Image (cartoon, rainbow, N blue to C red; front, side, top):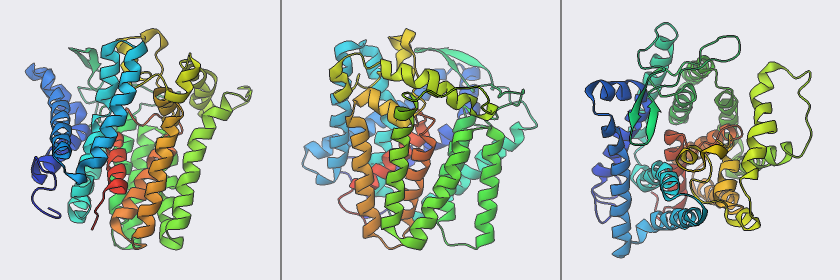
Length: 410
């Protein structure tokens, strides 16, 4: 492990990294894992990963309270999340707010392990290769085999929960989740795993083959957002390699601006649906329905500044104001409703810190290229998806945040 056996005062490096690895494996194999637990009557064991994440956060916060400066970024992020949860408790049911806080546990895990993985290039590449192989295999098999867990559900303490989502696009084409819980999850896993592989030195034909396999897998999931995110990520890596950190950082800031501007402009511009191709139907549903209703959740002027609080939008609404249920379908909309204008400011701060990281590293640096590629993915995909409620993507956002905020990177 980098630096020393114990980077944090409480808890060994192997405990944190090993637990996160098992968590990511669980996300990748979510469908069969939930199915097996259901058959064994042990569905609640799945929540052990939330317990693990909470234990990790508490251990690191204890180290910070004991004077460990390296834990400051975790303490700062925890303070921000708790503050916005307290805001939610003013107007939302307590369980809804706390469930919203639970959604950010993967983010905190990524933040915690970031400095531990900064030099673990070989470990990251091997894990990415395994993730890509499992995801591709699952989706390809699913094209020929109907897995028994797809479309199933079971009862939990939080109500009925699907094991793996079964749905179709227009024309009856199945959206293939493979071993993941949903098709868009499988697409995200493939893209996230692709980044460390293609920034590793290898022959160009091999990289092209990996990109082609990943792209074909995303096509089989019929996920349009990830399919657009793939070229956005490749362009970021090309710009970083060809022109350096300044151009690559400017491109990421442009992606962030587009992600914010699209819903803000779209809801104020009348766009007729007549004559539009059917491929734009889901986007128009966001423009005409999802995004206007999301902004309508900000019912008081003060909420424009600080938002409704954590849990104020998304899946947590099922435990309180379910009648106003809204998935946001845009990462900036999700953050605007949850945190007000502070949400995009947090993203801007992250992009500014990422610019500093990219500028401080060699042009071909593995850590910097991964951080830039992953950021391009969640910003581009985040134009039409909220990203925060995809656990693996949320964890990677935390990982990137941790890399940019770590006080000491090799």
